[in-house]
Length: 152
Image (cartoon, rainbow, N blue to C red; front, side, top):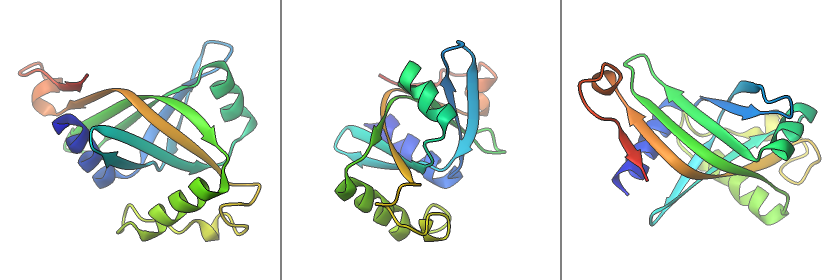
């Protein structure tokens, strides 16, 4: 649980991360996205409000996994390798929309300016992330002076 909590703290401090997928051509593709994470007991869940572009949809249909990598100039790194799935139910989409809206800056974000039809509109999509591996690193671990924290 310590690694999950530290991951959540780093992710919410850095806010934006590189999210990589792999398509049917077996080539990775990365983009910058803005996940928000929830920790309930030992279970960490990530959420991303995004557009289900043809590229993202094709990649996730081929391989329903993503790697989320956070980095800050002080070289604190947090990486989550996750199973990813599209969530379509309106109640969950509304709850996550409000989770973003109510979070303090810089994590909080009001999606109405980007998606004027709201969480039940056709344009916004919701990805649920279920981490199966977390890794935390810093200058000491990146230089080989200590072992990175990881889960499991």
